[in-house]
Image (tube, rainbow, N blue to C red; front, side, top):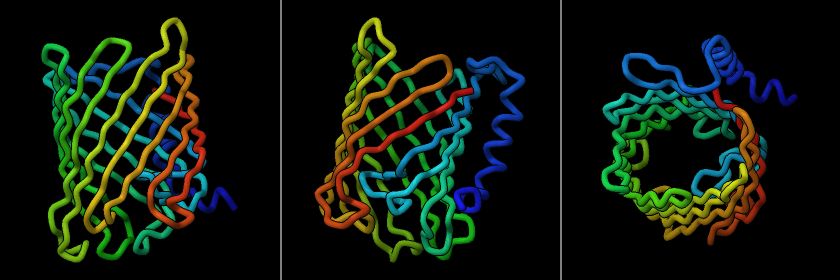
Length: 231
């Protein structure tokens, strides 16, 4: 049953609803910062172009805290398909984001945690530089996982680029992502995504085309649908 598959994530989303249902739909000011939360359902959880749910649905959620100084931290969670004995992925991250003269800088660390998994957890550093043109933003960056025992003492590097634009006088936006990965998680792997979304009140509907240059059902091209709620 679908409920049995995703039941481990239910307490997370109930907590989100409990915390934020008494607050306004916008951001909440705490300790000179803002708290945001998101609950999301996707038709397939694709991570860098590869399905982590065997081309099946995923229930996801996040809770983020942004300080006015530019520091931020948060947690993100999703169901996955038996990654080294775990069926839940949680990302814990800490970073710094700032903008200067239209240039956006973002650096941080992400801990990938798989509860109940065997030799599954690992840490990755990331950084990016972007340009803000108003209705259009673009960025390039990389994520690097140093050699760690849980991943066979091998490292991994992922280069990525993104362009996102808002369509004037409409609630629609479009985005294009491309990435190149090499290391323990990818062997000269390319992935790309072209998507569009529409926002109304605190909800967002999205559809995207995703593909890679790798063979296999989990890496083949696909159309991904999503619906998200923001609190």
